[in-house]
Image (cartoon, rainbow, N blue to C red; front, side):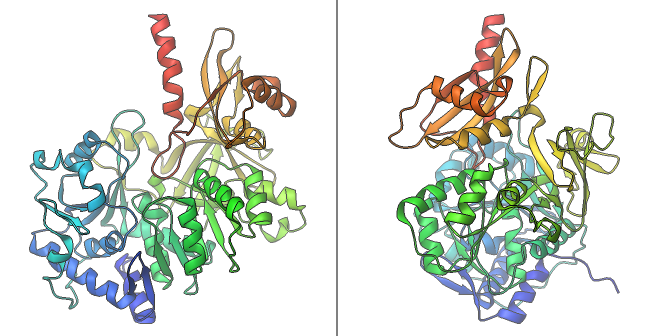
Length: 526
């Protein structure tokens, strides 16, 4: 008999094998897996009392908290669809997502209630709002509401693995965000692959740095729960707090974007914390420079693991962990390999293809788009068949990420399709230029974008954040880049900022950096 692949299985396993083990370590509380399941049952009973049924959307607006984690399991065992909301949006974005998703209930953290306060009364389909934390708001308190329901096992809906588990809205850099539909099966098989490649065990302690609304925290609430790992909550991305929790709770693994890692490395260099345990840091997002890998592994003594993916594929499909045949490489060569997106994870087929759909040569030079066929693939964009058909073609999902493949089969991201700079007919990878900028000792953060050029059509422009106390100028940065890169790849100009704009997951928002330059160009043309 076929056993359906359901995400609720993971908490069942944790309780059966690790019921009295620490599950959640919050700011003021420690919760066992058995206690977590009790609260999950209470939540499911409570949702049913509200009339929430299979297929209904239940939205969550919260930082990484125990309430957020229990929401995944409490919502899913009713057959409802977990709809996490980005914590860094504007009121109009929340209005759109809550309306578009047709969410019937919203659970919101007290610290974030002000973000939705002005819109929730205008949403006719939103019937229930509960507030996490010690709230004096007009909405009911979550804890008081939850405590009124029993902890005895909830009679689950008859779920199929093809049923939708979560609805995740991607960042809308142009136009409204798109809702990604992920099934139980996609999330389950992604978790099985990820827990293998990251070697997750019951001895691990995860620090939830990556927001759980971000592709379900890369699926971490599923595969760390399945293996009975302890999970430490982090409410805000503060590098000193991260290091403190790593020390205090003997954290062994954490996931984050390169920009957050950069902040942690700076704080580590300043305070030199004593962290004796083995630590694995899992990085995804824009490709980090090899200098990041070197610093993490040599100076901090942590293990660096680069992965790649996107919301539409649950999200991870490649990993850049050197294989046995790479052990003969020099340390520097291994760092260069580790900084790449890597090779396919189990359950995913990944290719880099040219405009005709043919695989590019494995020469580290030929650029193509990454496409994938994977067990992790979305069912489609919610109420957006046009975008679905544009992204998934002939069974392959087109990522929009441009890459090369080396002789060993390692994929290296060179840019998003929209971020490739075409200057005088030459393709320039902004990631390559950023890697050079990060090697400069005075530069803390860097981003490279295309700006209008009368002579070349467009040209690379650097936006940098200097380290505290540094005062280098534009010409010095340009000269430095020209000493290491072909001149056509080097920035023609530089802007200095105190902080780069970022998404909630720590990705640099290049669209925000580009916009002023191209708006000026449009005004000039008009």
